[in-house]
Amino acid sequence: AQSVSQHNHHVILSEAASLELGCNYSYGGTVNLFWYVQYPGQHLQLLLKYFSGDPLVKGIKGFEAEFIKSKFSFNLRKPSVQWSDTAEYFCAVKTGGFKTIFGAGTRLFVKA
Amino acid sequence: KAGVTQTPRYLIKTRGQQVTLSCSPISGHRSVSWYQQTPGQGLQFLFEYFSETQRNKGNFPGRFSGRQFSNSRSEMNVSTLELGDSALYLCASLPGLGLGETQYFGPGTRLLVL
Image 1 (cartoon, rainbow over the protein chains, first blue to last red):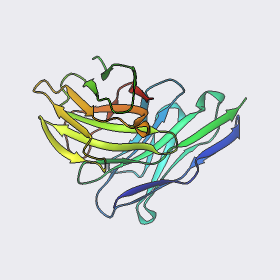
Image 2 (image 1 turned 45 degrees about the horizontal axis):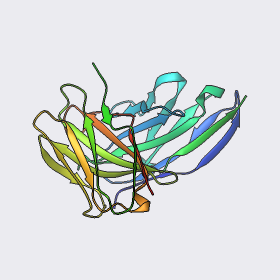
Image 3 (image 1 turned 60 degrees about the vertical axis):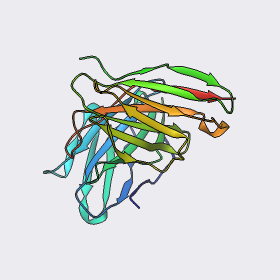
C-alpha cells in the first residue's frame, strides 16, 4: 500500500536555526508531491509543490524542497526559521490513482 | 473567488447518533475530497468525488458515507457515531481529478462525540 513517512513528529528549534523536515513515500510510479502547513487555528495551506521539471522547488515564506527520485524523498528546508514558522507541516503524495496520501505531520516549535 | 466552505464549523454529538457535514468547493472546481484529521494520525483519506461519482475511497467502515451533488457541493455522513470519530473533518476541492492539480482546503468541521 502507498504510504508517506515523515521522520520527525516534533521538532524544536531556536530562531535563525536551519530546518530540514524529512519525507519519504512508497510508490513507484509518477507522483505529485506537496508540502502543506497548518498554522495554529488556521486552514491547511499549500507551501510548495512538485509536479515535474527542476527537482528543487521553491515555495512561500522562504521554504524549498528537493525531490530525490532515487530515494523516494521530498525533504523540506528553510535556511533560517522564524518564530512565525511555528506550525504543523504535512507532506503529501498524489499518485496515478489520483488519491492524495498525507504523512502524519511534523509539529515545529520555534523558540524566540 | 471564495474559498472552500464547510458547515457546521463545530458539532457536538453523542454516541449512536448520526451526523451530516457539508462542503462547498471553490467555484468551478468539480472534485471534492474528504479527510479525517486526528492528533498523531495526520490526515486520513475518506473519499473523493468527481462529477457526482465516488472515484476513490479510503479504509473507513461503511458508517462513513458521502455524496456529491450536481453543483459539486458535497456531504459526508457518519452513522452510529463512536467516541473515536471525534476529529477535525476536512474537505478539499480541486478543479479536476488528474495529476498536476492542487487541493485547496476548507477550515474543517470539528466533531466531538460524547
